[in-house]
Image 1 (cartoon, rainbow, N blue to C red):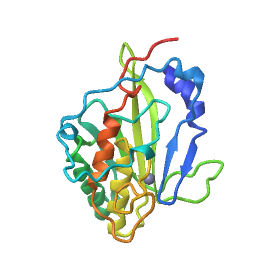
Image 2 (cartoon, helix red, strand yellow):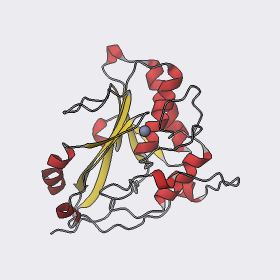
Image 3 (cartoon, rainbow, N blue to C red):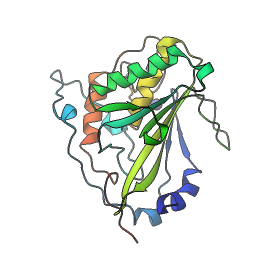
Image 4 (tube, protein in one colour):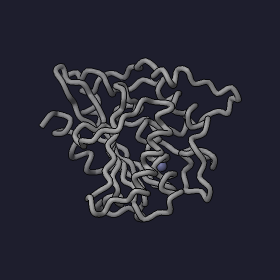
Length: 238
Ligand SMILES: [Zn+2]
């Protein structure tokens, strides 16, 4: 058991939920004793597809709504980001759910390199066909989708990484499945917050007619990837 798991696990099990109308995403509680051992926050090179992205119409962003977590902005630094799609037991598979999730992965691939993998152990992001697990004590209400992240270290010298789990409940209409997958994947790729504008994929609530990823979503993602983070950098021992 490495130090992150040993020290952070008790904290991770006391998730602080940010409850909003559309979905729930989980934050870590800042602990000053741990921050000292975390790497200093630095910026990574901007991924090429985001570097090339320019919104000529200048539609703006909602970067100010993106939360800075304990490890900093949730920026991926090694590409492609590996995505595992877990449709559940063979006999219970749903082609509709699977297609919706893969469509969302394809859509975000236009902006960051993503690769679907067949082994869960290889995944940076696991998308699971299940209702979000209940927490104790229970939060306000059961959600249909949720994204969580955890930290771990790998290598010698140890580098700090994160991995995400996305839970998407199967019992939703097709159009909402795609919207939920698109929205949650946006969180997992680094947009750890919600837009106040209904036409954005990361709008805080479910909408009647979901739209594709907006220019504002991509503008926000690009700004996230221009920020410093402790992820992807060497851990300094206390
Ligand atoms: Zn959300």
